[in-house]
Image (cartoon, rainbow, N blue to C red):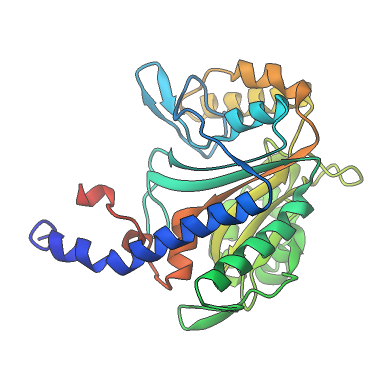
Length: 310
């Protein structure tokens, strides 16, 4: 049945793909205007970051990158101060109304910045995108109006769990139920009527982020939510090579204990890390951004082909 109606299905996507093209062009214009250099890094890499909940797709002795993060940070270490990239990324087993195994990501990094700087930049970029698309300061999504005028709320994770789930964060972490409660009870409440920065994640859930100086149990990490949709993940970068290696080893040990593939250690990234300046980086899901700005409930309608349509 899917094949019988394929031409009609593809034709129905045209207005959304036209808007997608305008959005991507506007993203580039924003970063060029801010003095960023657009770069490209390899898709095939010898070692992805060993994060517990992200599974890479292996091809031969290499891996399709799950993010350009490690290579982009090596460029920071080499003296590149402001860089961005729009590229395809790949993650095994990801499929749903907001997930694809192959997807488009926007990542940008700034030297001499922290996660608060990126919050400001997110506000500025999305407001400019909305203006360029003729939407103004509010965008419609699923029958609601999302107000993009800054500042956007900055809500700590511990406060969000208390406010929306009635749970203490330390109890949730001890019970191992953080992800379940986050998805079912906290996320649906975030990002309305304004986008929301959910910030200061537990350090145990921020493998590549710097911890807060006066609150070492928390990391300088945020996720951006709009109307219950997670749009971006960002943090002040960890530059302590010994701490980063310790965290990677812990993640690898946990993956092995759970029967997951254990990746090689990203040695060249670790070698470059001592040269990396204080900096901040962010990954934003382009497909989800287009879905939101097109007022679509499902990511399938804003990409040219889904896996099932190939």
